[in-house]
Structure formats: structure tokens, C-alpha cells
Length: 135
Image 1: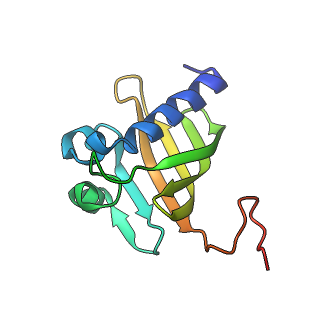
Image 2: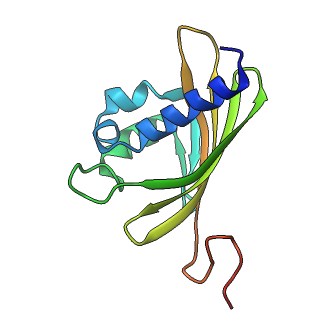
Image 3: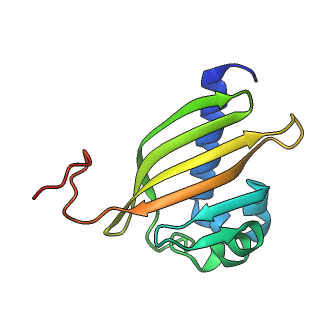
């Protein structure tokens, strides 16, 4: 899978799976997608390790089948190096909007693509979708 577009597609597929409420609600299913060295900086500035993220994911937003779901848009990716893809996108969860950047890596064929790093930033209501403040 050395093809650049295929690497980006694989990372996007993984990111979308992590937004699925059934995956978010299952520690085992989420663990299939997180790298053992995973770190996240959440939208409110909290830092999460692999264990903290897996342990808390079922209680975090977007993990309830009939509740609000993440609605991503503008997702793009770039291959930074062989086996390392950066994704950027925005997402809505109810009335909350956030910007995201994530790094997906693949160490070998057996382990597949795993989320290595994720950072989210809340977008204030006065910031337009193009990123410019409306004031």
C-alpha cells in the first residue's frame, strides 16, 4: 500500500470508524484503531493517553447510538512519510463545531493503520466556516 491516495483513504476510513457510535462505545473495537503510543489533546485542552482514551471513550460525546453523532466535513489528508498520514477536518457534534488534526501510522502490514496522535480545537460561534472571524 505504498500508493499515496490509498494511504490517505485508509487513514480516512479509520477516522470515520472512530466516529461511529458503536466503535466509540466498545473498548475492543476502538483498540483496533488506536496505536499503543496514542496521545490526544482534546478540544478543551485535556491530554489523554492510550489507556485514558480507551477507558473514557464510551462516556464521551458521540458514543450513544441514538444521540448526537460526529458529522465530519472537509476531511483531507497528506502523506508525510511512508506509513504516516496527517488528516485535517472539521466536525459538528450537535451545536458544537471543532477542528481536528490527526496522525495515522502503519508500522507494518499486520498491524494496519492506527491513530497515533489527535488534536481537536473548539471553534467559537463567531468564527465562520472559512476560519475568519465574523466581527
